[in-house]
Length: 346
Image (cartoon, rainbow, N blue to C red):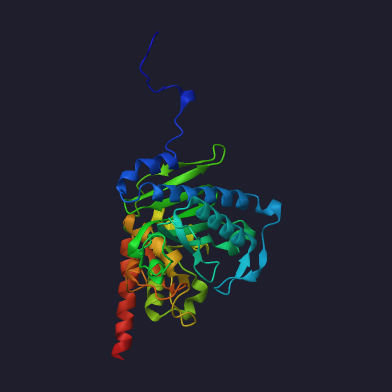
């Protein structure tokens, strides 16, 4: 019997397809000796649901699942059909996986107790961010945060399991459904991005060790509400215009954040005179992206305080958000602080 040692082929027809998400997750399991594989399985469950939502998104126009569902969510926002579908898909995947004991979703008023007696994790999720863009075929996304429950496994869910600050996250990520579908996540050891290859049904590592530029020339804010901004933010926006920065605002949080993460920039959803607490949700939008931003070398604040240090007091708590390149966020914070101090002096 003849035996030869395997050597990878260098033939042009044998090109490498790269590292799959599943293989990458397995290679990182040693970073979490306490998890015994549950966190890895949980990330796989999210990836599976993302594949299903990606399929539904791509066939939405053909399957008559665009448009309003006919009801509103807890935020008072009109639910789109794909909002409801995404919520069902992620909830079902997390239920069947068995690692999650409870879910906080944008689409549900109350905490969802999954009755998984052995579940060690709590997931906070916006199943479909930017759903108002569905009908016009603009990028949308999913945002998720993962926390370890703090009460004993098997006992009833308690408020302290749910109302944890962002600095207690063990993982967070987002899925971007756009010209290509990407899953980006962190477990506190850097940020990695995976692009979906539909023909193989797999996510492949495409953006290893993602790093946010420390500065940028892109600012993303809804300038239609400029007259409602506080004076410090108006001054910052005017300064951006004076420097001929590029205004880019899609109206889909995941898409705007993703672009600025790669290219450098700042995303702003501020407090206004009409919405003094801001509009983005702390638990399942701001915390996840803040964790990712910091792990990539960026920064996230509410204009004054670090997002990840804010202790939530209500399930669907809102917050202003300034997130992106460190220098741009710090400059915006400085101008806000300066104008606020001048108001106090008067």
